[in-house]
Amino acid sequence: MKKILFILALAGVTIACKNEKTEVEQPVEVQEIAVNYQSIGDEITDKEVLTKSQMAEKFKSLKTGDTLNLKFSSEVKEVCQKKGCWMKVDMGEEVAMVRFKDYGFFMPKDIAGQEIILNGKAYIEEMSVEDQRHYAEDGGKSEEEIAAITEVKRTLAFEADGVLIPQVEKE
Image (cartoon, rainbow, N blue to C red; front, side):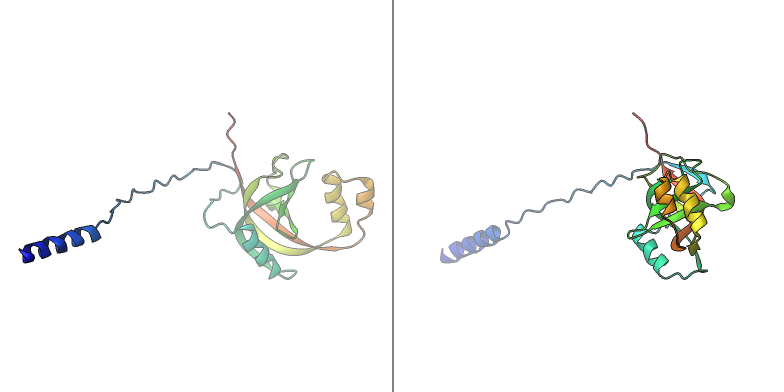
């Protein structure tokens, strides 16, 4: 009798200790959101794109005359309000002046604040006073601001051959 009670007690303890809940993990549903882009210039993809901070690091390694072919994304800070023939994009502490290969295409004038993808050549340039004043005039700066430009300036530059602008669906 003692053996039967001992076996029952041992079975009870074993069952009580095995009071594990086994939850079946539900598969996590991953939804990919497709982004449609307006493509301007050469056709490019949204694959293998550097971030703004990665691009800023690349610019730091460049000297005047060096070029790098690459693709990156950044926020548009300003667009030429006359034709859309240049734009400035955010590089963190600085902005990069973007022009378009062979003056072959233009940007919409209302994309400031949008995140875009650019493909092309990054380089450093020494921008003349005359060019700085021209871009300031195109950007709508005042006569006083334009007159205040008196020195050559080291600038981050990019010649884009293709640009992707996310399309916003209107409801």
